[in-house]
Image (tube, rainbow over all chains, first blue to last red; front, side, top):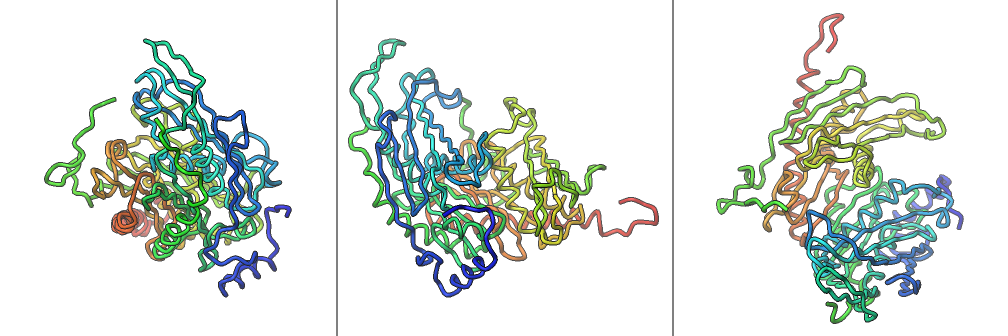
Length: 271
Length: 245
């Protein structure tokens, strides 16, 4: 597969014609994800990492930790920073340079979906209130773009966080001492992101790159373990009807439960 | 950090005295800028937003032009003095994302295929922010597009639904945004029942989500009326010969 920015009309027509019969060009059902694989601890230097594939889409996320200062308006909370880069390695449609709006959107949607779900308990990342806390950097890189980068990036970020280890800290007055002993990050939830595309009147789960080229719009839901919505993002220059939005949410709830089974378990005994 | 205000009184009134389903007063003026092809100024609570639309016009650089439709470019920007603590003027990641979602909220309403190889530029400046600026921007920008004489399928109206003390409320102000538990901005083309922007941040059960969407639609209808009224005010009168509107 070599990604182009345009799609031949004949292909567009065949995708649309198949969708009308409830079929997809890669043989999937409308509400079927591609095969997912998650390989954690791929990068030994990182405190947590995950290489995730959804079909041929491949992304890698790394978690790095450092000790920094809490934000002045949240003196009792640690910090999480999510960054995404869509690099030319992943597709000829990506160009080198500072993150564009697509990169920024993915990073911010993943950030919101994780933050709102309270997946990472920031209260437990404070070391000295108002002064010292853990800063959790989640950096996500696209390696191969075959559609649905949002879900892949989120899956990688959450998997990397679930398996990340931080060193224990001893506090003596204002002095911090990092111990050799490690413990998991205080993860409390495992949000799953599900993106649904709309082509014509069909709603499709996990759009592939070819499908994304002719997509009218897409909607992403981040869903917590107890079945609540933690974030939503509609994207692309089309619309969904009111009823399509509700239908898409129902589908997303179902898919999220299946996908969650593939995620690493919540760490036990996080501090 | 400042003390949390009383967000909901025992009588069910909000921090600024509104009922849960009550919007802040909206004021829209059409055609407020001389040099733009279309423009609008909007006040909604403490929000003050001004929008200029240029186009359809020649696109530079030319290689960006699309053979089958107009290219829409949108810049959402907050002035440094629009918020409590001065904001650096350079675009933040937030502004980059909002520029994208605002553009995608407006694009479905425009007959883009009528203007191949051209640009439609939408410039939004938030002069003062009081919560819900992306929705205020969409509401104002849609009116400015109409003022520019660009053919539209429908106006796009937007409002945010939030969760405050476990209760769904319409049109969050900045205090409710800061201390509330959730925020769900929605934009629609009411004639088509079409949702053109939908975001959410905060926890919503499936039931709450359905209710929030319904509440948003109610608010959007009110905003839509204000938009049409503003346009009517400028355009319902036939100008005398030689007179500019």
